[in-house]
Image 1 (cartoon, helix red, strand yellow):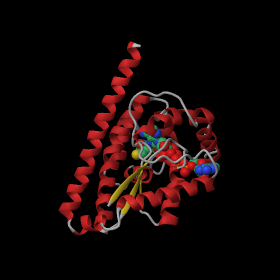
Image 2: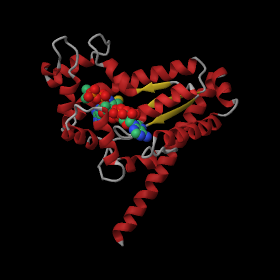
Image 3: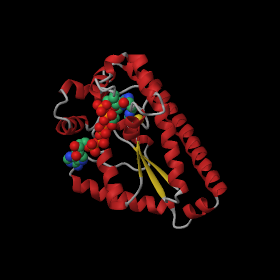
Length: 243
Ligand SMILES: CC(C)(COP(=O)(O)OP(=O)(O)OC[C@H]1O[C@@H](n2cnc3c(N)ncnc32)[C@H](O)[C@@H]1O)[C@@H](O)C(=O)NCCC(=O)NCCS
Ligand SMILES: Nc1ncnc2c1ncn2[C@@H]1O[C@H](COP(=O)(O)OP(=O)(O)OP(=O)(O)O)[C@@H](O)[C@H]1O
């Protein structure tokens, strides 16, 4: 099974692309934002909500005992330390749930699954480039009650898009119209279909050890490629500094 990560900054169009992949191409989607909502519900077995109350106080609860998302958002998007605390509580539960769902789709014999994860590549410093104005406009159009300053805090709490691009195998440019995006998604799906192969994904499903070995192979190959690219980037930066 081909596991595809879909990421981008806030309001870049991840959910729009997910909807196209799911509705037009019938590809299963695992949405990290939705899972992050589930794990903080009062009935969740993860106890994330109790941990959040311990960390942030019971001001973050609504009268019915559920999470006041707007209030917590106001707290964490403008404060990196608090954001880290929140991430430390919620992300392990989200990752575990995503893993279980990937295994579930694999057991059902799916050819590919797309993980829609806003924070696939975060960490590190932030430098400005690209389409921040489009992001901001679309974010404010989608959530008209959000004050512009809060919208900016949300944007700056994530790595800028240009820094995410080098990690990607396929880049969708959603600065144009929706129909332009649809064309790009169609082409991407054709490419993913080719990558998943006509028969290889079936072999790795019918023979689980082959699937596990091939998944490990991909992880190791990606890690080696990453180390090599990082080394090359550091050497280039080192040369740049000397000059
Ligand atoms: C802070 C919370 C309660 C605000 O809820 P709200 O309903 O206002 O926003 P929503 O969940 O729809 O998120 C909207 C977007 O904000 C961005 N975002 C959410 N959490 C974070 C974070 N911790 N760091 C940076 N960006 C984030 C993502 O792009 C996301 O798509 C909520 O975002 C949350 O619980 N965040 C922690 C979980 C998380 O990191 N989710 C992102 C993927 S795992
Ligand atoms: N090509 C486009 N032209 C105009 N509006 C668009 C386009 N693509 C997406 N949008 C709109 O921009 C807004 C943000 O898109 P979407 O919700 O898909 O982003 P997202 O990356 O999933 O956001 P978040 O990180 O907050 O979950 C939505 O209101 C969506 O309808």
